[in-house]
Image (cartoon, rainbow, N blue to C red; front, side):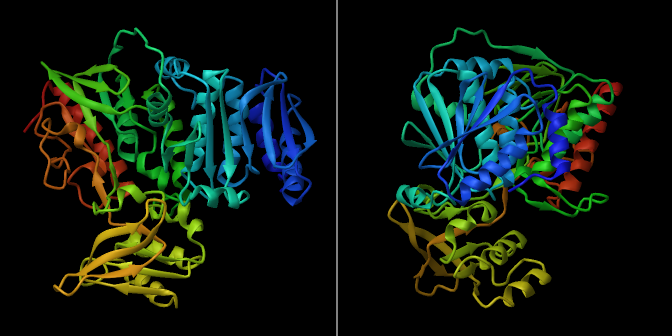
Length: 519
């Protein structure tokens, strides 16, 4: 692969501020992959005098990054193209101590307290939209922790026998010191927490951090970021607290229904949301979870997973929703081993195999259509007596020769041996006899569940867990508002969430200047 002149010019701008010299050391096995790596990295290095290339012969393709001749600790057993090209750029930029993804002081202290040695390996697919965040997060942990820790990213499409030998069927899959640490989408905060449990950490005698704001927004997806921006534009001191900016949007590949934006991707939209929020001096506190919220007089105190206490008189909840699970025997132990949720990320692992898709809504039928292009057969299982997807999607599905639809059926069990699945046990809703469907994998596409568990007992929710709001996004608690997919507002769409976030912010400001909340 070669980079075009436009990309090289962009890289020149990105790398113009580099303060250190970097060596991109290629281990070339003398095959086609080695040639592709050399072409890519030579073009990449041409963007800055601070970058140089070194090539040595070896059995396995590999790319290492050295700063001032010293190993940074992370490497790529892959040609970092596709979604991982950003990981290569950030590897250099972060090694120079730069990048808006660089963690805050609280996270840095926790990373530096990790016990070592730690050897991290992440298996990825270059088509996976969830993999880059995991790779970039572990690279950051490696850089900040320093000596005694390493991180290697491996492309499963190149090292297929290695992947098959480990029984990997989902990406990203992360190993720490030879043991599985994590499978699937994640962020720096979650990965750090898992590492702390797996390898241990030195005790830190730190006082809880207490910070005061005018308004706190929990959740940084389209609704939360919109609420934060609208509030900051009113001159308020705003904190935006979330596990990751963009939220569920990060798992969406193509977005084509935002008016005036003909086409974008979830990762690009998430990056744009962060960029816009940064324009207004919003305190973005990502990579952490909100564990609970307490009421202290007129103030709302938000307690995070980092031991922080964030205080403000007003709070906007915009925590969105997450994929629902089946909740049947065999599902949990086979996640990443035959049970999957993202067809774009994990579909390639089931090439030429028989799979099932549970769910007949738009997401389920879209997944089935995508998977039909690479899988031997796709069986759609729907609990209702008819599919709920749009007619155009149903017509497309029925035009495919390797797909089948079974309605009025309930999935009862995922059958497997712990390393892979072999079948699903299903039951007809008319009381007929249960039977098995032989499959190598199942993609669960049964909708979203509101992320509101942290607010149980704080605000009123319905039986689905959605927060009850009025037409102005007010909850039943004065000074607490909610917006987006975590609420009872119908139609879970990005553009609607953005509007609801703006509405919540404007309502909160209106209540603020009037000295209270109307009911």
